[in-house]
Length: 148
Ligand SMILES: [Zn+2]
Image (cartoon, rainbow, N blue to C red; front, side, top):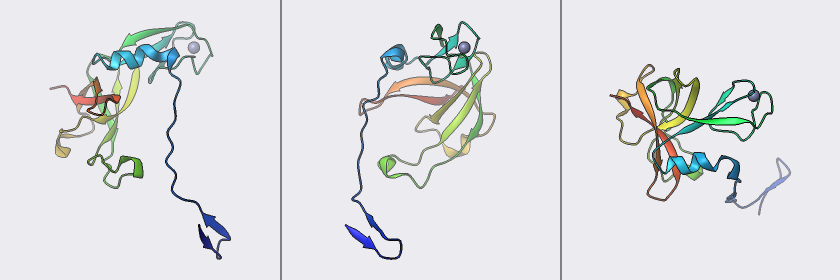
């Protein structure tokens, strides 16, 4: 291990961590992505809408939630092009995370703009839909795709 007398530290080897994240209480969300759909939840007790879906309301802690699909046209309210990618994203081409507001459903969605959308087409105010997809590596995810 590399010893640094200036800081009095040793540097460990680079670690690669993988987690198994329990999602059984929101399995419906992951299943729907495979069908191209993106689901969110609404709390029946206080009305809070949550995306990504949670098993328990983060406002009132009720677990009485109902599912709904995000299927309207939303609008990009913020985005950024990621050119310098973190280690675990080195294999991805440059990508663009964005936040879109779906007023009809009352949720905001953080997602990548779908691959293949030209950078110059991405703007605040851009009309988008959110779409579930299964990547070539078998990862279930969701993308923002231009609505027109
Ligand atoms: Zn609630």
